[in-house]
Image (cartoon, rainbow, N blue to C red):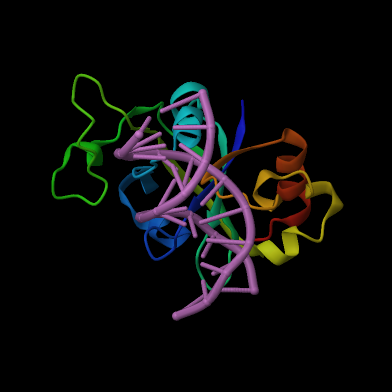
Length: 154
DNA sequence: GCCAACGTTGGC
DNA sequence: GCCAACGTTGGC
């Protein structure tokens, strides 16, 4: 079992939105970065833990816990001509982009980026490294454990 | 809205 | 295969 941190803009899908969706689950569409795609396609398994991170918003930080609820399958938006995530180089036979489904587990009191930066235990987190922009990054089990046990409040 | 950092594209 | 130009991300 692996652990991941996945960024979402709350104006797109917030942790509250996720909790209200059918099955409390969403297709993680729109990833157009190969490294992030490869994490989903090659490494994610059903049941993997996910820290749901709010980015590009007033208080960026970890807003909840989720889990991977399907293995990867072709991202439907790449085939839709009118869609902003349409990719003319992708075909049904050779899709270029994949996504998993992510399911709500619980909402927590947000752990802001500024707070995350204060813990030596978390200084190796990819999200905290300078210049990091990857929307999906692996979390060390130790980082996951520290966040779940020490920082999560309902 | 600014801008640093970084990924992708495409001409050569 | 190099690398300049361009587009995007995302904190501030």
